[in-house]
Length: 596
Image 1 (cartoon, rainbow, N blue to C red):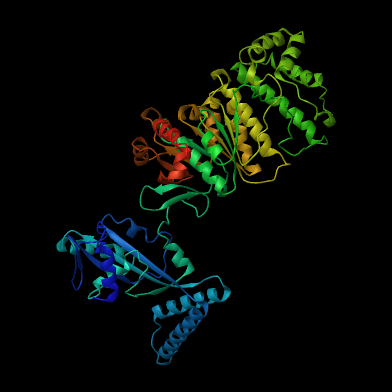
Image 2 (image 1 turned 30 degrees about the vertical axis):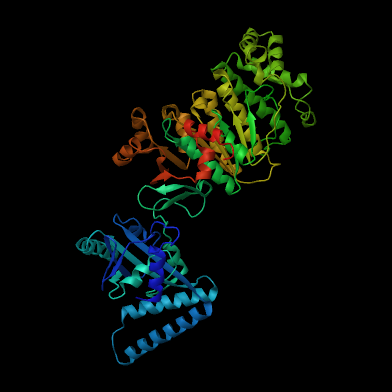
């Protein structure tokens, strides 16, 4: 037994004479020519001596996902550029001399020699240009089983798997101990069976590489359901940056949305959230974001505030005059949402006149120089409606009375009190009454959209998350606003993420289907049996995908982009989990431990 092996065994099974500890390794080690007996189990080490000429992304994934116990060790050592260039020069010289000798003797060209020479020349050119580097790599496998007979059968299965990958795996006869030590996490390669890899081939051996739907940049969503690969997705690398998350209640849709929010902040993405259940407050406080608590005393949002035009002016009029027109149209939408129905054709002219009169009452006209004056409020609109001689205008003023002088006036009773700024802005709607939920969501989307489309702000990647979007989609005017945002977000380097638990409300209307169609990223988590038929038709789910979504565990889902799909499981670190969880039991424990 070598000195290294004796020292290793002493570390594994040794115990302090004054303080006994549990052994870290087997209680005994029995060395055989082709295998080892580790306590009550057996193991055998295979070393890879032959590799395929070309490999693709995730080519080692079948080894990492082998159902039996298989230890895979990949030892990588960079080769200095000067040494690599000299080795390639000698290899090219040997190959070229052999080819010329065969040609001089009239022999046929050996295809293997021609291919090897071409590969060596391509690698030498890459090294000369600095595009490639050379690495010395060894791949070692240790197979474990409960008995020697089971070990033989398991080794045959592993060797058959290696053969399917065009790998030549040989047992380490008379070097079984050194092979076992090589596969331990000690950074020791006692076998030294090396093969030269270039940068591209080595990067393809990354153990978490995934050959299915994934990207090399973006946000980590979780682990692939099949295999040990990681699912990373970059929404800003798609045709458009929008996404939809559809799931039943309790399936983990808000958990995933909050996790994506946190990980997007890591990459410098500015995020704004419409939060109907006050679930993002702890996250905003942890990362130093802004928290706007709509419905709280003294917190108001004025729908008449003028912002810059979201589009460049197409006429001779300056952009500021377009801002007045845009805001007037938005007030039309807001009034329809407050009323719970579209404004009728007989009432719409009166409403339009009243909106312009409200602005004129505070001195704001089409002259851009007047747009810096304080904007009117909803009460000014009702006064203008009451002063109108049209009976439809007075009826509309009476219907708006609860929002100007009644129980629901708190949100509109005065100028805007908060102008949130920062890398994360959360608008909480939990304390708004149900009658104002859709209107509050619409107001926050308008405030967010002004910031997104404001040319004065630095152009950067932005993400707008609308949680529980069914509150807005159930109103026709709110659905239209969301549809327009989904269509225009890409032009401003912004992604719109729609999160909802009621897929029927989203998919039953043409506007909802348009929002889904304009989302390049589509995520489906566990679904209710009552909604699976609608989803199957809308997304073209197969029978297997349908069964997977019906029986998916919490946090399991399907990421789809076009015709490509991958099943994944959401993962989070303990620190991230504490910030994004909404489990009442876990939140109670966190409240009892404020230091966490």
